[in-house]
Image (cartoon, rainbow, N blue to C red; front, side, top):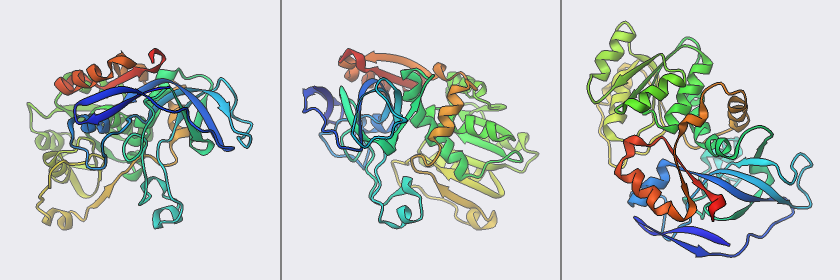
Length: 340
């Protein structure tokens, strides 16, 4: 069968690989759509420290079950439309022992530390598969990145009494905004791109801030009577936005980091103590896939609007080049795996 592989930064190639082996607890999935995420773009740019080359990318999956192992639960059947949790966990490290499998010390995410789903078919353990009777394959490919944002909102303990500032309104940031707006309170989205700020409003942001043309700190003070946001969630991954989160959060507030800063970041650490902040990381997603699937099934927000472009499999190289050249124009690119 065919697959697409990163040979080196900026260079992909199609290749033939073996068919997957199916264990008794495995589900065989035919790929329909595959989402490209910020991690994939970092791999393309050669700035993702967790990846080695060559690597088959891809972990945002919308596919169809075409085979099941003999021990697979009866709730799965041939023809079911599914998405996949792409994270591995060892079961023995401290996070696994306390049930926080998403931050397993030895996690290997599909398409990052191990080969991913940009191939015709994949075999996945049934515990990692989630089905929907109503979502399209494109919508299923959106579930994983939206779940990353939803998990970050949970990490920030967002509630109806909070003003939540979300820095970065890409797909993951919009997942945060959707989750935070569902939980109540006031949500503020920050981005440099007009289209993404408009999308943030569609997904529940009461206010948006153009960080390229106005002071985020001044605007947040205006919106919060000078107090700052009670929760700030950073979904960009830049030193300046890491620091902005600390400056914008209220005394006694919570800061959640999703993004990976590509450079070392310096802080005025006195703010950590003066504000008595909770500073939290948020990695992958945990126990939220069913909630996010339900959110999409109920059509609570215009999720199909997230898709900026769809490229055929053989134009994956062009898809990355398009995104790399105009990142502000892209919310989500999907690869049509039916064209393999």
